[in-house]
Image (cartoon, rainbow, N blue to C red):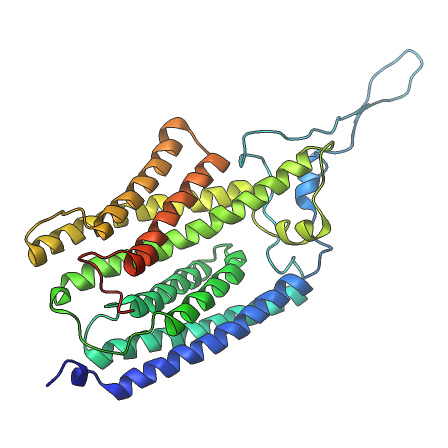
Length: 362
């Protein structure tokens, strides 16, 4: 029996159908998220500007009863205070969310989430049927890794929603990138359902690669928050500088609905800090698997090198925040560089670099 004959073609076809169906529903979710942002009322945004100019937290005047020779009351005006502090540490309220705090916008958002749940169910079904078609872990090549990666990222998003976290703002960028990821997977990275090369026949495939997928999906959410932080932080900076250029109507409409820069920065930091030990274990598990497969723990293979570079990038990010006290833009740039290393380790090394880990299947 040949390796190709070992695959269940019926299940493999069903997997493809489910993935295509998931993409169609994700597209509807994308449109619903766009409607949430576009048609959500703008009348309830503007709290950031009020907070940064002291209008949201301080009364305009304080009346003080004071005995005077001529009688009467002295009114002391409280000066407006413009908050200027270290990037990302302002005392600014979070925005009302993508829906802008209105029933109409909230309705579109709920529709988007419902469609995302349906698409996620189809997506997970496609991953599972792909695994059943060859009776192995569904991440033996880049196509399978990409589809599973996207499913895990959406799973984290939905889990945070279930836990009542304010993360609906992730919905639009998440669904957009999931569509791009799946589109790239089926058009460029697609590999027919087949058995693994001998070196991958190990229980470490379940451990090492699954940890890499989980780590990457979580780090992706952190990277989205970091990128949005940079936009929101610059927006808050413009509000605190009355003499500089002020944000335009589009920036106010979009960025005002996001969480504050400080909240985005904290969200990204917490995710990166929580996931970093798992990424460390991923590298250790890979080294143990390498010793079993190739007789050495570390051989400076390109995949190993870039996995370590990614680890160093996030280690520097966490170290800078913990010891030097980096927050805001400097830490954000370092975090994005670290995630860029993760992406290159996946796409660049697998496609353009030849090594022992060349199992891309493209």
